[in-house]
Length: 72
Image (cartoon, rainbow, N blue to C red; front, side):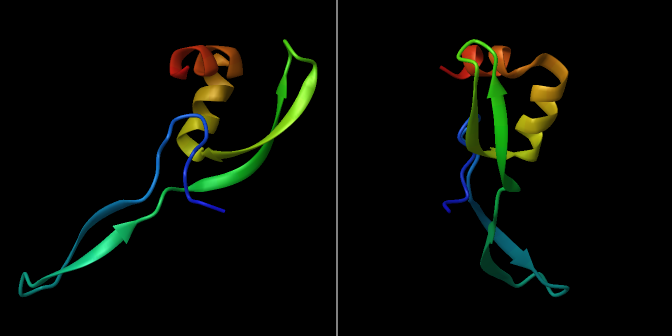
């Protein structure tokens, strides 16, 4: 499973570990992605998607339809 949200496109980002002495080494920040079943009322069916937790909160607040129309 690729760590990419299918609704928002969030994925893995790169950054630095910074030690106490400020030495920097590369690291990755992985997206908080979960496999969820989402019901689409227009099509009357369940769809399994990899969705970030931020997208789940947006779905609960505004609904799936608004998020899908906003992102394509």
